[in-house]
Image: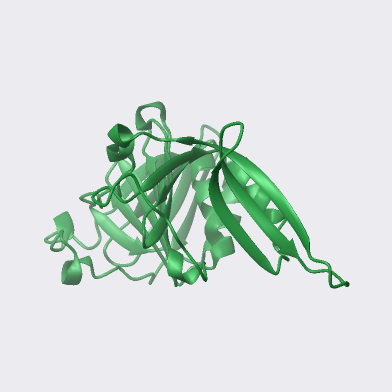
Length: 257
């Protein structure tokens, strides 16, 4: 299940699995002004002007795929046999008669007392932050490595170097990337440079992760992001960020022993 959080200015998609069970967390932020000509929402109260809904991603995706060629699309929160996101699309026709297709996607309304579980995650105190290589290239490498192992070690340093490694009893494979660059977090981050300050630029920070979790993130190459970054908390967590115009996506993958 996925959480859709609506505020007057933004839409958020939040996925929060139990990290203790090896689950991932995802936070995607979209500016409503870039997606809607008209946008009206009224939250619980003027002070808590938000709506939080739980929705099955596959149901929402299926409904939206069928309206890709629509002339216009309206999305409403409605009460039918249960709370629903009702998606009404006006489809192009050869005649003057309009054709409207409607989808009702069931949702659960999340009560106010649980909203704290779906606030924006803070940037972890990372050891290394680095720009990612082209996602398509990275995905091709990871796809091939998946045939050899279920786990992958991703390591990087402050000299713009990153390695993707797998090691099994039978084979050891490493792909090297150089000159990737490191984001200047110290210039405008609340971390004030984070623990990276004073770190040996050649020292590698690493995280061993479930390779399937990394594959899921790399599907984001479809977004063709303008920036893709990776923060590594040594042997604890992999924090991946995609930025593209009006969309930002954060993805957290816990490290495994």
